[in-house]
Length: 383
Image (tube, rainbow, N blue to C red; front, top):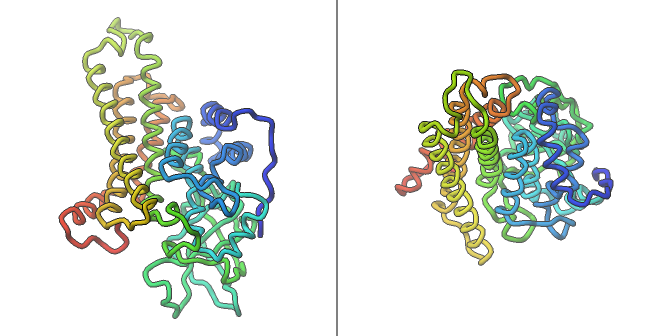
């Protein structure tokens, strides 16, 4: 079940190549509702999918902050590309698979693309030492370019996983993609439905999402749900930055047909862009501060407290909203310039506004974080 080895190229700077392609081809991604196959290859060459793979399996095993900054850069080039790249984080929670399965998965190298969709878990039927998996799952982000697919399952009468979902992993070619991702933003993520029909999955290719990792090291002790929220939230930070830079590029030079001052010379725009800059920078600072503090604790061999984990979730939800608010503010500042379909400002607004809609970043996370701050009991699954 190992993925095919990655072809090498002579590109001197794979990340620069990737960012340039994402900026130039974001319209293509949106139109075809997926990241193009060759660009997924660029992501592999740039180290996106090996970043969170354990060193013992040939990966880079970078810090959470380093991976988040990588995704932020890609998202600034294109939000959909950043979102798909963010699933390089899956290598952390795949650590709950048996080591033998991980060794097989990465046998041809660490540049393996995984796409997982868990909810709602579908019933699976035990067949000897395996499970027959059937069902349809939504939100298959990045599934069109995946090497492996993971789907949420449940086995009747098996209470061993507790409240946590069981995930069945299989080669991507065993699943069928139903192209139905018709949305207003992040169109290029290709978050289509995925159908699995009578696929036999050995037990050693299943794991409990959120269970203890079989890999050692602070990266694999970092809270899985918090990191899953962070890699999505940072997309909004990247898109928000792109929106500000886009406005800066034309605000000084573009004159109004009415003879009004350029955008840069209008007091309301001057005030609004300053507020947008402050909003984005402060949210970003809180986001990375909590990330680095938490990782320092883990590197010292200590465990995180519920409050520290809650701050990771709070920082993620706040960053998602800040990026969305900034992109929307830039759209308002742009006047009629940004109202046209395909204009970068409209594109950024639509991409950014999708991010805080995700369940990991929803309004309820603020309420849950507040409960933790007060020393109250948060809902199950938080932080």
